Each structure stands twice: as structure tokens, then as C-alpha cells.
Image (tube, rainbow, N blue to C red; front, side, top):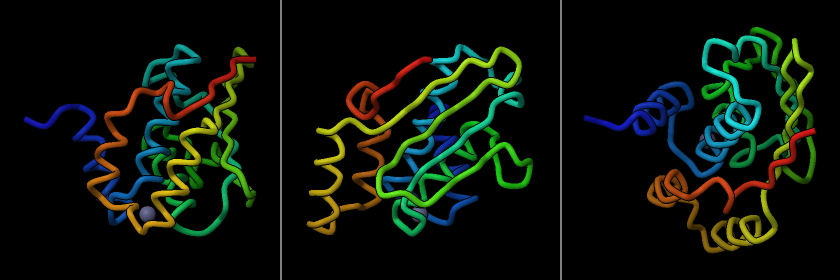
Length: 143
Ligand SMILES: [Zn+2]
């Protein structure tokens, strides 16, 4: 039996076509946002995401991870994104107005850059990321 996380990653693969580190980071980012805002899956229909990210792969793969984990999609207009050098996402709960901002920690960004330089942004590395604790990947700020 696959775990819930494995099943979600396989679902993301179906949508996105492959499993890469930034897809996983997007999945985890959405999950971290829902946890920080304390919202259930059914309440996520009131969530909006605004994502800054370099708009080319592998970085933009992040957007599909966020779409899968939050239901904030291009189609339902609850996902906005813009081209930026640094990855940052703001998640807003429509009704309460609660906001959480999530970015990558400096040490983790460094590790990712290094992996990219060495051409090691592999699927195997992606699955390793899936098991990393949130606090090693993200800076999470509730507003
Ligand atoms: Zn991708």
C-alpha cells in the first residue's frame, strides 16, 4: 500500500508528467500552507495562492505541485503567479483573511543550487526531499 504522500506524488506525476524536486517542493509548500493556516482539504476551496517563481523549468514545476496540494489552480483563478528570481508564495484564506508567506530557507536554497550545478535534480533526489521535514525546507511566516 502506498502511503498518502506517495499516492499524492503519483497523482502529481500523472498531472505533470514526471517527478522532480520542484514539483515535490510545490506539493510540500501547499501542505505547509494548509497546516499553517489550519485548514482542512474541504476548506481549501477558500484558499488563494500568489506565487513568485522563475517561470521556466525546473523551477516552474513548483506551480503544479502547488496546484495539486492546494486546489488553487489556473482554471479556478485561485492561483496567481509571476516571474521572479526567488521563490516565494503567499497563501490567503478568503474568509478569515489569514495570510501565510512561505519561502525556501537559505541553507536549503544553497543545497538545491549545488544539486542543480552537479546535474543531480533527479527523481531519486525528489523522493528524498519528500521525506525532509518542513522546517529544513521552508521559512514560514504567519501574518
Ligand atoms: Zn517538472
